[in-house]
Image (cartoon, rainbow, N blue to C red; front, top):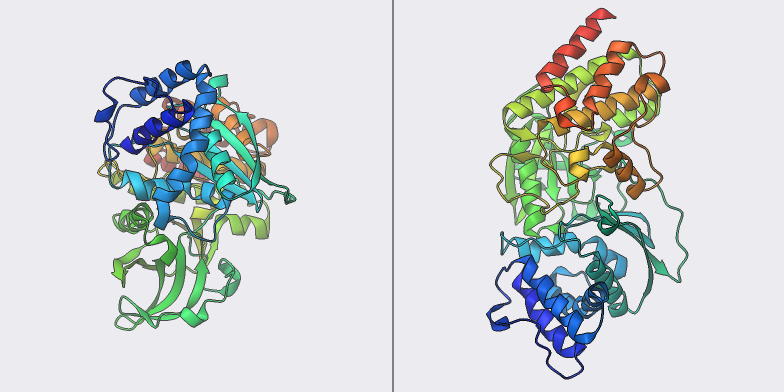
Length: 484
């Protein structure tokens, strides 16, 4: 744990003891704010403090969280947007932790938080740390609310102390009305939606006034999409006389080393794969401090958009799409690259024949990353509906995790529903962790038995029960196509 926490534990001890100085540990002066120390020692300090003040450890942890919040806000300083309020700050805490602690001290393992914002006044938070310090998280949230002079309501539907695979919180800002929640279980950001206006993510703010004339020597034509991490421009390569898409990191993210690292990793990861079913990357660079990725301009629509527009796809088309996804994954896996976020939003059907292109390698990992992950220490990352059990449970992700995502896609296309369902982020992840999806044949009786068996193998809870690799899956799907 980062030494900064130990520094504030000692300050908290003085406050909690009301002027007396309890003995919370021997040799406490060795804890330097710039150091990294064992988690167990922090727990020992707080346990000793709890005993000296006659409080329980959970109560002490929550009180320490309330005490710590305003101090951390001061330290965070330049990383906190002046326009943020309680839920905004909680939503961005993971990025702040990366910017302040992990980048300076790679060995530090601060708490990992993942959030979904279904409404303006409501936030769902997953806490996946092995430390299981959820009372501290509760205290931090309430301390942040006190700093902003706001009142919040905190529910904890699941908790590792109750045997759940992760802790979760639903935080609501009061007394404002909570807006109706919209589903965020399959949301996506930062993907090119195509060149035509009807196929791009709607632009939510006027940005033409700030349109850059060139990026990396390419002539910028117009903005064609934007997401949480950046903007995508249509541009012209004058030398080769071709149109390209250029993805530029949003200026508000450029000061965050973790966000920059993830952004550049996406381009470099995809550029390592040369395959007709993976989006082509032309160049990765930096323009006035803003990283950018020059990509193949894809004209068409995502698999999600195609399904929404056309409804259920015919079986031959489903098998063809599944095979091409598997072939693209096989090419990535041969480069040691795991995508980690396979879902319909990240499968692009390129015109004119709907050829698959796998896009958005923002969460991809290679064997050489070594500590450069977007999140660490039990992090839960990705899109909830398509997460593998090992991702939910904090296990090791590998090529078979991508196969699980492919299986969820095929199940959804064939059955018209997801294999794991829930009305919230928490219930969705809990369903995946239980690993008991309905048999595909039971919900889609018309699906041929061999197809149903393959899909159920792909979404097996145990990785060992899934197919050996993506190449094997592509071959099996090709055989099923020929058998139709």
